[in-house]
Length: 404
Image (cartoon, rainbow, N blue to C red; front, side, top):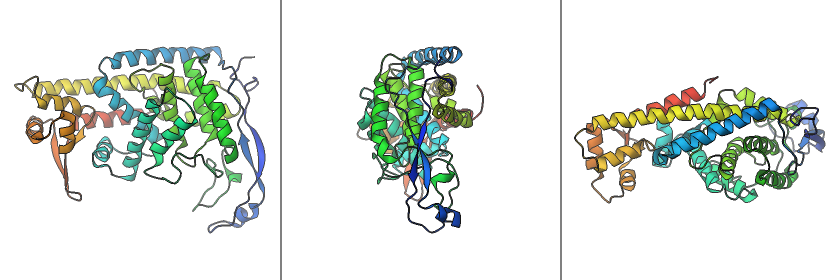
């Protein structure tokens, strides 16, 4: 039989009865209290470390097409990595965060990077940028410690008590939860009990390290298995998509830039979640197809983003007519493509100078490339490249729309 169908020998989840031994808390209904001490069904993930992955013919063809498109995109954009690698990493992190209902404008995200603080959502998106960057840096050692490190970078600012630690308690997805009450009995999905997490992750790592599986099907299955294990108290989706990027880099499908797969997943989050549900029932095809199509959409979105940013930078050259080609002002304009909000200390760092940064900033202000902004709360002054921010916001809006 062809793997990737419900009647195949790819194993779906089994379940075990677990006693709901909790102390009644404020906000529980009589129904909640009646369930204390009664069992719920928790998933038992199958071991996949040595299983073959054979999606159906049409889905395997989709994955092959997507893999080829990713390689071409990486080679195209990789010719001019300096500005675009950072931008693509940031946009992938923002799209991944948006899947979790965490969103902020390009300006808010950039300001949070400059100030080191901002709105709660902007700070969490910046943390996700750092987690994605850490994931790529750890791509040559896909193991449990690397996964913990990704999660630690993601969560240490917002929830340090759980950052970089496997969960110790039961979690569940969906269902009826109000004011902290509710129970796994009503959940849409109950991941495995905490005691199964370390062993399940070790099995996942064995699967992820194999080199006898086509890359995109392997990445899709590994991602679905990670989300099924749900090893953390929070941050599982973002960490799982960071792991996806790490695997693409580890398998050398990408070498220089991040393909914005999450922007493709955003076009139909329902389809994405349904594909994860199908995987848990023993059907590989939906998640392999979902990730493959998301990669194709991501390539399209990423290519347009790079083109739009290139057009902005070319337009600035016209505005900078008469400014020396080797001037610091032009070098700073190059940096603004990837860092569209700057402070004076950041300008010094980007230019590698110790002083006189305002002279170069003023050139860009006078040519309409930068505009000044004063934060009257913190008294910090920043400058914005609004042209770049507009391109990034337009990209984010496209990423959230359905269809290619």
